[in-house]
Each structure stands twice: as C-alpha cells, then as structure tokens.
Length: 220
Image (cartoon, rainbow, N blue to C red; front, side, top):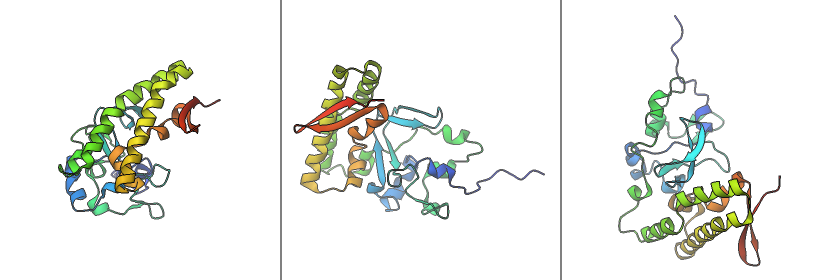
C-alpha cells in the first residue's frame, strides 16, 4: 500500500511567511504565546500575497501576520536549524489546518474570521486615536491605487499623491515614537509596513532632499 501523505517537517511552508491570525487564535495572544510586537499588520487595501492565486493583490480585510525573520520571509517562530516550530503545541489555527499536499481546506479559510488590531487593543487605549488618524491620512486603498497609477504612467506628476501619503505615514509614526517610545516591532503591529518600504518593489526610490522626502523612479 502507498504510504499516506503527511507532513515531512521540511519547513518549506514556514519559509514562505508567517501565518495570518484568526479569531480562533485570540487566546494565544491573550496568554502571551504570541505578542503584539511579533505581528505585522497588513491593512485593508494594501498589497498582500494571496495563497490561492499566488499573486500580490489588495487584501479585502485587515490581516495580522506573524512577522518574518530579519528582512526575510521565514516565520519568526521557525527554528532554521531543526526546521521545527518554536510554538508548535500552541501554533495558530492556519498552521493546524495546513496540509501542503491537499491545500483546499486552508484555501477555503483565506480572509475569513481574521483578527484585527482593534481586537487586541484595549478600547480605552489612547493609541486608538493615532490609529484612526493614520487610517484617515494614509488609507491602504489609496496607496495601492496611486502605486498602480505611478507604475502605469511613470511620470514625475504621477508620484505626487504617493509622496503625500509617504510623508503622512512617516509623520504619524514619528509622533507616536516621540511620545510613547514604542519599538520598531510594535510600530509594525500598530501601523503596518511603512509606505516607503513598499515602494522599491514597484521601482520607486525614496530619498530626502533639502529636508523633504522626494520620490523618483529607479533607473533600469
């Protein structure tokens, strides 16, 4: 009889990125198994990897994903040497469902019952005021739309809207950092990935010029 297909503990799935948390994982955060500073927010409308299509697409809901290691994609909890999960007995629901040889069950859960930042933050926490300001001044949908426009037109004028969003994003982050002293890791949970770090993949450079931020297209 053929051997039943099962996990070979090769670590390949974990190398592709940390899981998105669902409401079933709320207890893991409340118990401290997964901390806020180990998560990164992908805000509604920003580009994210869709496992079903294999493409970068605007996400229709906010996602909280376990961060990668350093500048790479590998899940923060992956032991690279032993190819083992550091929180295996308390791993998120997505990891429990995943069977790489038959991914249908996992694909059916994409964008369903996802956790958001407000699910994890005390309703009385004053940081929520800054989150609301950030959402208003730096909408993920607007950033993605302007990024696509700039990529299509490739003109200096098409970068103007993006420059404003990048400035707004950095200004709010810097204000919060000055007043609260949050770590960079906590900032990624609160405000997601900085806009300026999402530009290089679209062939756009961000630099400071005469005390102001300027965007330009990267020469091929």
